[in-house]
Length: 159
Ligand code: FES
Image (cartoon, rainbow, N blue to C red; front, side, top):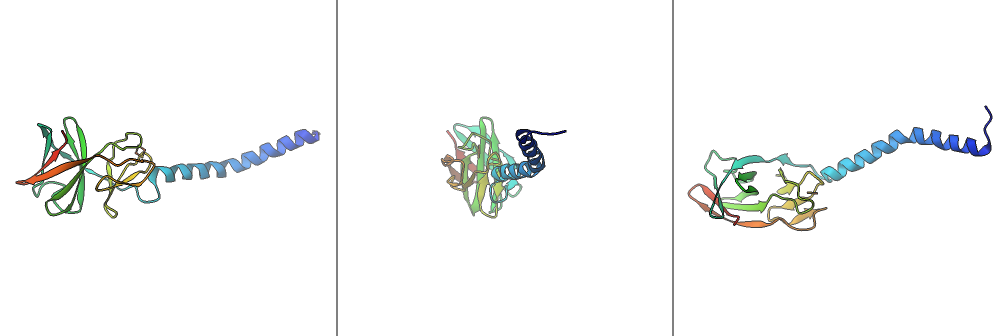
């Protein structure tokens, strides 16, 4: 079969595209994967802890049986109206943050204990234990709630 110069050019471009496509596709997928996980690890899934909501306060057991009893731990506290991120940086000191990512509203449920950061695995945003953005795409901090420790109970003021 004889091709015109134009047909030959088109066939050559089509052939090159078929050969280059797998490499291009792999590159795009790797790029997407990096965006999902961010440059650091995605963190470990948080333990779930049950809390009780009453009068605008969520009460959580923090005795020795609790996943957040030890310093350096973090958890996702579930209660009737929602969830709150909690970490335990030092004795009798807790941080409590909104668990709803300020980027597009995903539930944050991972914690990078090495960097003390909460990680949203939807698009890789990272927040420090005070809720400040460490890495976007989120542009706003997480809401922080006041906490109090009373008799092996953590009280989080969400109301
Ligand atoms: S919704 Fe959390 S990073 Fe996009």
